Length: 282
Image (cartoon, rainbow, N blue to C red; front, side, top):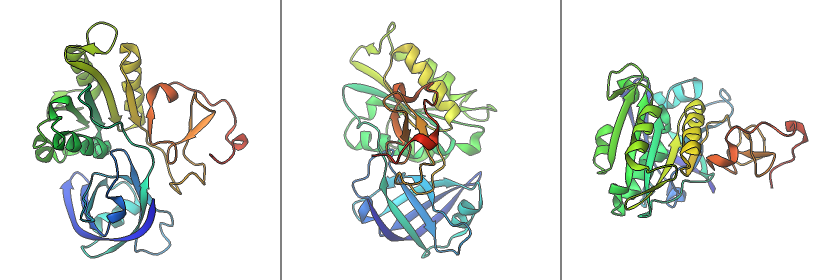
């Protein structure tokens, strides 16, 4: 983890409020893994005061990095309008990551909306390691405007299954319906065994989607790792604003212990203690 200054090399609108930032000066991120994130603040005044958290989409050994974002408030609106050459203050890489691609598993990569970046990186790494046949991307959005970077993902050689709530692209319905279909295709019986290996689920997106995915995995007895969405002010476990009730301890923290968790540790857990009784995470 390092605090450093990056510069915007390219800022591309992808439509639907989505935009792609390509950065330079990010050598500290060279060894980042899918699921890790950065805290980013533009070269603006006091409004907004706090940085914004973004999952990493891509990193390079040459100091390059890419972030996919969607304009939802003042901070992201300022970033969307930032010009090439603008400075950004970056802290990272932060947080936990997904398990690496493996020939032992077929990974079902389930993404919703702006949750696609860590799964994009996971599929990219699988492709580079000759394991594209062991990954399938299940990508859902409200409409076709929420499905971005499709040509880049097709180039990975992994399976790509699209869903939209309005039926404008791919399967009509939720991405969880596509997940159920893919599990039916892969999983035999009540465990995760299949011919040639096992299945696991890696998911990132809105929390409602994640809980539905995690319950499906639990019912099918399939390993599942989810990257949760929580508000973050610091990114390093100081402010305690991203507490997640867990089985392994009363609370875990999305920024420090996550954002990637084994779904079995946090699924359907109610807070055991008031947050005021919980100390700073060790």
